[in-house]
Amino acid sequence: MRIAEALRVSGIAAVDARVLLRFVLGWGDAHLAARPEQFLTEDQQDRYFSLLERRRAGEPVAYLTGEREFFSLGFRVTPAVLIPRPETELLVELALERIGPEARAQVLDLATGSGCVALAIARHRPRTRVTATDCSREALDVAIENARRLDVANVTFKLSDWFSALEGRKFDLIVSNPPYVADGDPHLDQGDVRFEPKRALIGGADGLDCIRHIVVHARRHFPGGGWLFFEHGYDQGARCRRLLARAGFAGILSRADLAGTERVSGGYAVRA
Ligand code: GLN
Image 1 (cartoon, protein in one colour):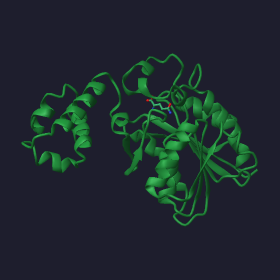
Image 2: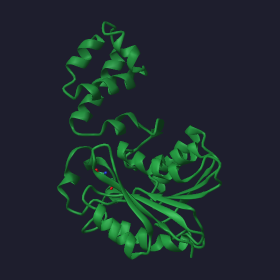
Image 3: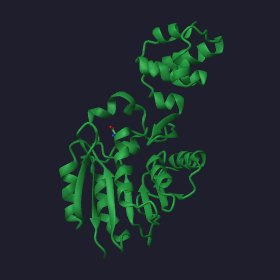
Image 4: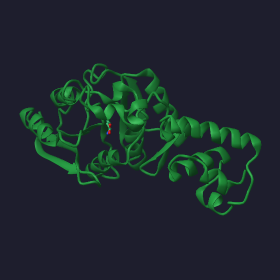
């Protein structure tokens, strides 16, 4: 079968079919576009069709190829971690705005998953020391592999249930993309999310359990003052700002993603 035909008969979104075929061939997009008449080998065809079948059954493209780009860096992903999303780049942007290129800041990323947020910050601010935690050993192993592949050395990984393994540690900036979907939210039964770890998605009855925990406990890790930023659901901005205000944060703000949805909130913990 020729490349053009393989793409035509895929039975899935054209953009996904191209990614899967490129993955099987190990080619870039331009290479694929330039060779519509080339024949696939039998082995390539078999592998492509088995991926198409899994995609038709709903498996996310990123889990099929084992990779996803985030902040222009290539990350390895497995079903042990959430698939990095473009809106989460906001967390990195807010962090980079507050850490100067030469700053030797101590940064904490809670629930790091694939490590995408921690590693993007570390890569762009080589003088910072980033600590990245997760409560899942499997997730940490993926993050550690990503650090190795991206050759980022200024990140250390730690198994920790939120702040439990961080007693006495001080930070200048804390970021997190915690689980924040409400238990029973119909969104959990749709699309890619069905295949992602529930533990990385669900934040209790109203989705805010983890965010409440982070906001309340972050304060004592900022003895010298510091910023906290976290991602949240499309309708949680106002509640997150109230939680931050009640916990004594100053300079509270929310920032919208490209779709215009409030997606990240945070504030400044003044010096203790
Ligand atoms: N944004 C994800 C979703 O759409 C949720 C990610 C998270 O809980 N941190 O389901």
